[in-house]
Length: 178
Figure (cartoon, rainbow, N blue to C red):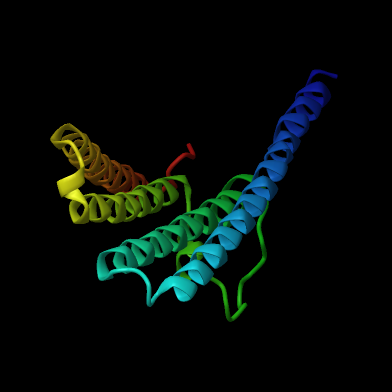
């Protein structure tokens, strides 16, 4: 009787992973909002390209790149997170399967997310430097500080993942398993 209740409890706990599925669906909706925002900004750029200066064109293009990078981040979280924490997508052999998906785990996903955040932060920092004359130096200081913090965090996440992965491989287990 005790074994049966343990199996039932274990099955219930394992089934709870499906509670995350609506979260990933919500991120897909958020990605749709970003696509809409991208299209609106692109149309605005095309309509006003002859009326605005080079700096404003560059800032708008950087904004478009920022939207694309955030959309890439969303895809990594949606696809990688769903595959890692909810259920397999069964994409083996699919011609469009992302290369990184075949070896994704929680550690790899964290490092990829951290590097994506660095890219997004870099775009914001570049936009800040372009309009640095109009900004207080304290704003620039804090943006640089936050960016450097992202860089160090990504480095330490990657380093930690490398250490735990190499130790796990040395003992013959996968990270997160025992």
